[in-house]
Image 1 (cartoon, rainbow over the protein chains, first blue to last red):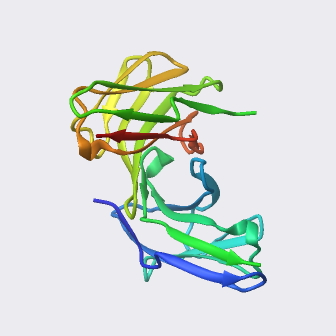
Image 2 (tube, rainbow over the protein chains, first blue to last red):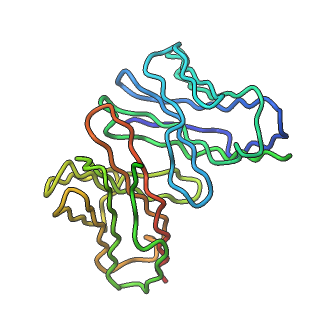
Length: 112
Length: 112
């Protein structure tokens, strides 16, 4: 079945540092990939999605692309802020985005 | 403002007791979901409801059942709760194919 692997359990940065987190995915379909963000005490919320390999998704200063050849999907931000501290989930969507497969999440801690 | 609500937010039960978790949405969304979130595991899909009385098992339905008698309400029921059902439970809803899933704030359930 579909699966998503996030290897980075936690990333610790200082404000204005560059962020790069990635994941790998496995599916038999043409995937749509998402990054969801979860702040403490809240449910996950959609950060951005990428529907086509090598295209770029952009939202709130974050960018993401996925590479079909290496089945990898990454999220980056040029300059993180303390308010970006949260858990980031790499998510694989089936056709129609009905069934979402979540990775284990990456905890981002940004110190001022 | 689109909103998914969950009640209660915190619940402590003893093993063998019955548990009812409630979810509501004010967006007339057709499709609703129940997930559970455990440390280091991301979110796992328990059940999907496509509309009133139209429910489908997700990836981990064992030990759970659901009820949807009105479009805006979706309940998760644990008959005779077990300690391994201690988790944070999230409800989500969306309208139509390729639409974003909106998540509620979660219910933290502890089964002693």
